[in-house]
Amino acid sequence: MALIPTINITQADNGSLITLYDTTGIYNVSTNPGGYGDPPANPDYTDVTAATLELQLMGSDGTFTTVYGPTSVVSGTPPLQTFPTDDITNSINIAEDLDDGYYKAIYVVTASAVDYTATEYYTFYSDARCCFKKKALAVENCPCNCDDKKMALIEAHIALLAIETAAADENSVDVYNAIAYMAKICKDCGCGC
Image (tube, rainbow, N blue to C red):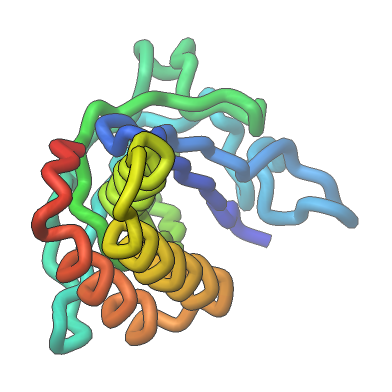
C-alpha cells in the first residue's frame, strides 16, 4: 500500500496561529497501512524531501480560492527534520490570521520524488468566538437596562451554535451561511480579532 498522509489543523482562540499536525504515524500492516516506514511502497519520514501546506477558502459560489501557500512546512533539514516525522504529536505552528470560513487544506509530502497528498476540510471561526465573548462581557458588565445587550448575546449564541453544528456535520453551505450571519451580527462588535 502507498503512503497516505493524514493531518489535523487547529486554530488558536485569537485566530493568529494555526497548528499543523502530521498524523500519518508509523506503518503497521493491520492498524496503519498508510503510515511512514514500509519502503518502497511507504517511504520513511526520513525520506521526505519536501512538505507543503495550502489553504483554500470557500466563497459564496462554493469555489475555493487559495489564501495561504502552498508553503513549505518542513522544519529542519531532511532527513533530520523535526517536521514531518512519524510522531503524530509533533506539530508546526504557522503564524497566519485566517478569516472565518470553510477551508480546504492540501498537504503534500514528497519522498523519493513522489508526491503524496492529503486533502481535508476545516471550519475556522475565531472572529465569531471573539464576538460572542465580547457580547457576553457586555451583558456581564451592564448595570441596568440591558435587554438589548441580552438579545444581542442570545442572537450571537444561536449563530455560534449554528456554525459549530454545521462544522460538525461537515456541511460547507451551512457553515458559509452561519458565518455570514454571524458577521452581520458582529459588524459593530469592534472585536479586533
